[in-house]
Length: 287
Length: 262
Image (tube, each protein chain N blue to C red):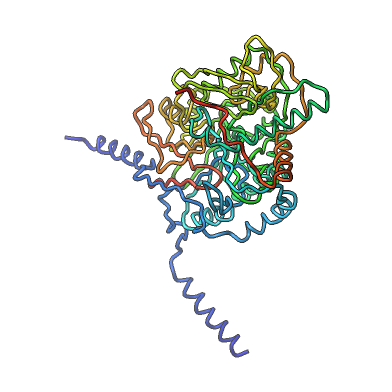
C-alpha cells in the first residue's frame, strides 16, 4: 500500500515535469530534411535465405532480415519510401504451391508505398494476376501497358503522388515488352506501348499538372542492353523531368547508382538492387 | 538605385524560391542482406505456416550428386565458358529427350531425335549433396510442357543458325560446331547422322519455345506439333529419380554438345 502511494506520488511529480517541457515533435528530430528511398526488385518468391552451400549466394537474403532492416530505417527516419520494381512471383516452390499469396501478403504487411509488375507476375496468366491482386491493397503502377480490356483495369494506376514533408513526390512505372517472354495467352488483352513516349507524357503530367517536386520511375525494362532494346539507361537519357529510376528484370548489382544526363542536361540516377532480396536498395536525398 | 517596389519584388521572388525544396546531397548504399542483419521474429512466425506446408511436399529427397550441377542461365549471348561448364543444362535436356521418347514409344508417335531448350529456362544450380523435389522446382519453376515438333530441314537449319548466333543452347541428341566469329554453325550431327537439310526431323522442345519464347521464332514454321501433356519439371523429377535408383549417383555427360570451331 505504502509503495503504491509512493509510486502514484512519483508519477504525479514526473507528469508535472513533462507538462512544463515545451512540446517537441518527436519525428522532427528524426532527420526530417532527408528522404530515404528503400527499394527491392525481382524478389522471385525468395522468402528464406539461399542455403548455406549455395554456389553464388550462400545464406543471402530472407524476408525476416529484410523486414527488421526496413523497420529499423523507418524507426530512425521520418521520410521513408519503400518501392518495388516487379517480379515478386516465381522462383521457389512457395509460388508453385501458394500461387503468389504469401508474396503479396508480405508486401502488404510491409506497407510498400508503390510497386509495379514484371513479366513473371504474369506467369499464371493475366486473369490470375488480376484476381490475386484484387485481394490486396498495395498500390500498383504502370503507364505503358494498355489494360482497359483486362481484369487489371481498376487495379493498376498510371501514377501516384506522395507528400513527404515539403516534398511532393510523383511515382510512376514502366513495364517490359512481354512478347517472347511469355506466351501471348498469358497477357491476353494487354497492349504494350512504347515506354519512352508514354513515360514522358506521364512525367509531364506529374511535373506540370500535379506540380511534383520529385519524380521516381519504377522500371521493369532492365538496366542496359547492347542492342537498341529500350533499357533504364536509354530511358533516363532520352527523357526529361525524371530524378530517379529504380529498375529490375536484369538482376543487376550496382556498387552505386548510375548517373545519366537527360535531354535537358540534368542528372538522373538509375539504381537496381540485384534480386531475390540479396540486397535492399537505398538512396538518401537531403534537402 | 533600386526602388522599394523592386526590392519588394526581389524579396517575394526569394521567398517563393526558398519554398521549393532544394536538393543538397545524395548518398546511396544498397544494404547486403546477410547473416549480420537481425531477423524479425514476427515475420519468421508468419512465414512458418507457409513454410511447414511447403516443406512437407518439397523436402523429399529424390537423388544425390557428388558434384555441383551448374546452371548456365544467361540472357542474350551465351559465353563459351558458361555453355561448356553448364552440366545442369546437359543433364536436364537428356531427361527431357528420354521422357519425350518414352511417351512417343508408348503412344506410337515418331520418336524425337533431338531436343533444344533455352539455357535461361533452368533457373537455379543444384549444390552437391541431396537433391530434393524442391530443388527441381527451383531449377524449373515454370509449368512448361514438352511438345513434339516436326520441322523441315530448312527450319532446322534456321534453328541451328539462331543457336549459333546466341552462342549455344541446352541440347541433347545434337552436336553443333559453332564459329564464334561468323556466328554460323560449321558442323551439325543430329542423332548419329550428319544433318541433312533435305530431310524432315522430329524433335522436342517446351511449349514456351514453341510459342517463340527467348527469341526461338523458328518454331512458328513447325509442320506438325503434338502436345505430350508432360511438364518439363516432371520429366526432370523422373529423370533424376530413375538415374539415381539405377546408378546410385547422378552422372552428367561431360562431353559438350556445342563445340567451337578453332
